[in-house]
Image (cartoon, rainbow, N blue to C red; front, side, top):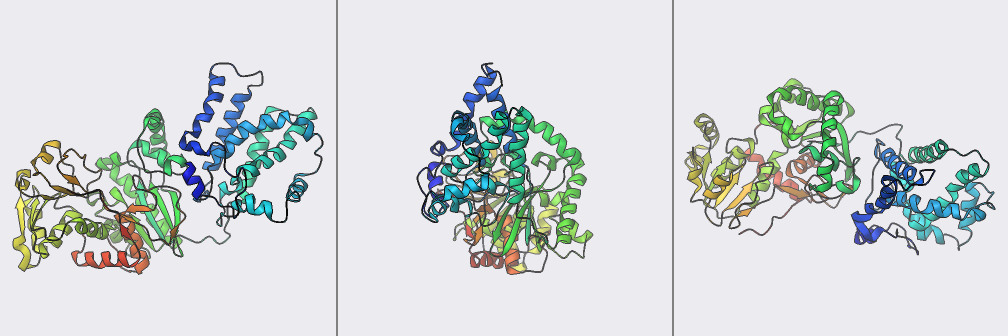
Amino acid sequence: MSSQQGKKAKGATQPGILYEFPWEFMGSYKYLLFLPFLYVVCSGQDDADNWCYHMLVIAGLRYAQVSLAREQRLLSSSPPLLLHLFLQLFLLPLVLLLLPLLLHASSPLPRLRVLTSMLAPPHSLYAKYHSHHHASFVTEAISGSVHPFMEHLMYTANFAIPLVGTWLAGGASISMFYLYLLGFDLLNMIGHCNFEFFPSAPSAVFLAHGTPLVSVFHLPFMTRSFAAHPFRTNLIMYILWPLCLPLLLVIRLIGRVFIADKHKLLQHRIETWVTPAFAMEFFFRSQWPRINSYIEDAIMSADAAGVKVFGLGALNKNEALNGGGSLFVKKHPDLRLRLVHGNTLTAAAVLHKIPRGVEEAFVVGATSKLGRAISLYLARKGVKVTMMTQSRERFEGIRSDCPAAYRGNLKHSLSIEDGRNCSCWVVGRFLTPAEQKVAPRGTTFHQFVVPPLPELRKDCSYTSLPAFTLPDSATGFRSCEMTMERRNVHACHAGALVHLLEGWTHHEVGAIDPDRIDVTWEAAERHGFRLVPDKKIC
């Protein structure tokens, strides 16, 4: 967390002195504070008790323990757990140095807390420090360790009394330190987990999947600080890359769809689930039955739990895989939830990026679900559309879906060279450098291809993948949706949420209905969804 973010995240009503952690200004570089301990251990300079080693192990175990808590959440106002772990590393030796003072402390911990509160005017300490803890109005596993720096100083001293007391009595052991610290953390997490005796199902679920192998580290419960920022590969990710292979093996053996993130939209609980499969696996036909079984099981579980809308993200709705979700609707005609691929809003977003007045467009990937809908929509608007596809049969099928009065606006193409004189390219598949070079100077590549095209042409423009900023009523975000900024989601995700808010009762699967493109766009605008702007277009 940067110092600027820290200032914005203050939760206390009247923050006092030593409210922020001393290393908060370091942002993500705070992890460097572990290096001296690591150096001492690796260089063999640790003391006879291996103190540095045990401090590192305890810090790692505590972090892993809270990360694995199934219902853990991190509100935007909560400082990372590692800030607390750093405190334990640096303050515990200080506590031991102050041992003579601790010998006079014989009161139980609750009485010490009361005594501390009496040292200031009524409610003063609460307003300056402890009110931050209660700013987390939805408690979670991490909430037990969410306190300002000054309050952590007091807790560190208080909680050291049992450890020091046992040591003074001659009954201390290394295992006792581990059991006490980890056991106390476990009880603290249980006390803040917001248990529900009558759990309520989310209103909507969006099903994502892994992209590159290292994307596993972008999951909130893997590395929160990494997940709190848009996904970017870096040196640390490549260092950790070998760990991806055993993770992939575990996923193959015992994997199942899991919950990655939660937030709220108005009164609705929204969850993001993840299919335990990486993008490369979707391109192997042999893996399709396994992937579809994951998706089907997730749909049926959500339906049984009372979920209203189930959105399919990215390759989970691939036409070759399951017909854009239509496979599951046909197999389970009595589904109570609405299955939504969300591509109607994706098509609307692509179309709204195309400037008004465009007279012709060159569409690559024209027979895909999105390519078909965009081509039909533009043709109805009087735009001359050149559809590049090697299948004459598929082109004629799409042309027959176009009203007779506008069929003349659709032209079949077999070669990329037919786009040489068109400056509006709509791209739904990867383009090689040679193919990109065909486009004339000043071309805009309006893309819906995943992953996005490499921006090789400096004299052309590339739109970003269609995405929306969620309405102000959306709260509780603690991570980013892949490369998006926080609170931004892919258009298909937004499409599922619009489906929920509108209360539509139809399934949005299979082919996109061009007649619903404008309807869906207007509904998104009405609910406060805002199209994420592109970089400056040539």
